Amino acid sequence: MHDQVKALDVSKQLLIEKNTELAGQVRVLQSSGSPETSSGSHAPKLPLPEKYDGKRTFYRQFINSVKLHFSVAPDRFLSDQSKTGFVASLVRGPALDWITPYLENKDAMLSSWSDFESRFKAMFDDPHRAKTAVTKLTQLRQGRRPVVAYAAEFRRIIMMRILITTPKYIGSVLAFLMPFSTSSLTLPLKPI
Image 1 (tube, rainbow, N blue to C red):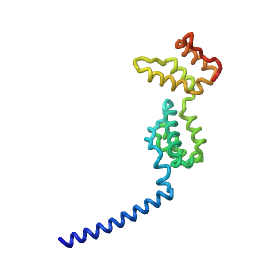
Image 2 (cartoon, rainbow, N blue to C red):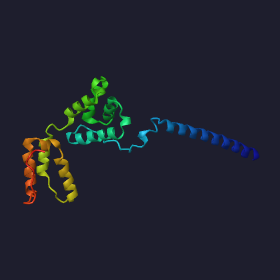
Image 3 (cartoon, rainbow, N blue to C red):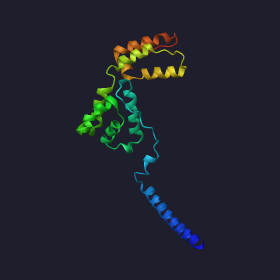
Image 4 (cartoon, helix red, strand yellow):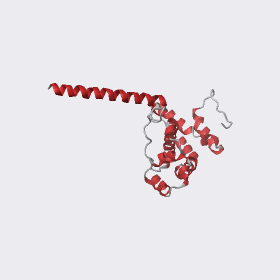
């Protein structure tokens, strides 16, 4: 029994020495500003965007979520290839079918975020976004939902820059707003 206690004391002493050595290495790494302990550990951890299947109605939600990741953790996306690779890892269905030949052929587009984004947008964004927004705006009703939810939906639709800067759609926006106006409320008629 005495020998076992002595062996445990020796083992304990070795573990204390190893722990001290490792703590010193951690301090050195932290003071050197290594990539593992730099800004990445202070950035908020975001959940991954939901996998995108190519549906036009979810394109903007997906691409904005991806861009949020780029802006919150820029040290993770230093190259254009890391950005396109991140998007490629989050697609499925028709979107995966679209990107697969580019991946297999190691297309140069995958090395340029701006080129990739413009082709991705051309393929999956709603080409009639302003018209779709006007349709949604004219069909917008509060119904039984809270005013906050109704106002948020209105704001989401109206914030589409194309909707308020395209002359042919400004009239539709104003027509939607007219029932809400009163004699004390005036709407600017000049373009924003």
